[in-house]
Length: 218
Image (tube, rainbow, N blue to C red; front, top):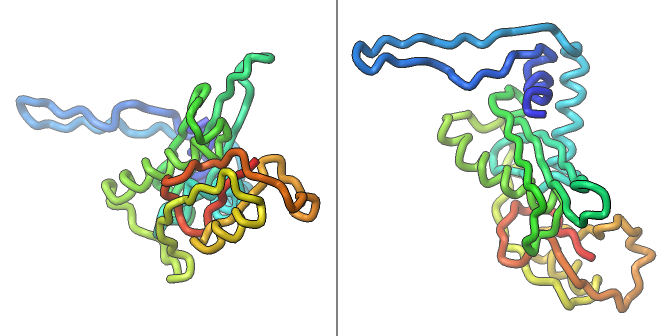
């Protein structure tokens, strides 16, 4: 999966995965570089740019909002699948690439049967892990931030507890701190009864996510 996204990030060219970047002789200091091996052109550069744009929308507007990192454009795809038939076990995942303008890094997070309060959806539990990883790795690798306007750069906010509140109260509280509310089953807001009470939320309260992110409720 990471190789597939790397291919998209590399303009459609498949590059053979490698574990070693270089070998350093501890006695002489001699460095032997392990050069990357480029293979076939799998998809066109035009197609790869379109897919990157779609992946960027997933993080900026869709299910991958919790993977955002301040100052960087990130593309990604969330995944949630059942681990077997009628096992009640799930696999949550998020694969991301950044920065979109000049891709340098692909990250893949796969969580097998997550059982915490955050649920089992890729956007709710795997995307925040990817955000934490990228938040540390990008500055460490000295990857330059994108040329983003001040309006695009968001700050971290703490998710409030909305369990036990009505949908209307929860929506108001989340909006007050700069977050959005999303129904887990994507139910139309017009169809939600006034006495609808929140029984669960993802992410859970006290977790920090970027301003503008979504809290999924049921």
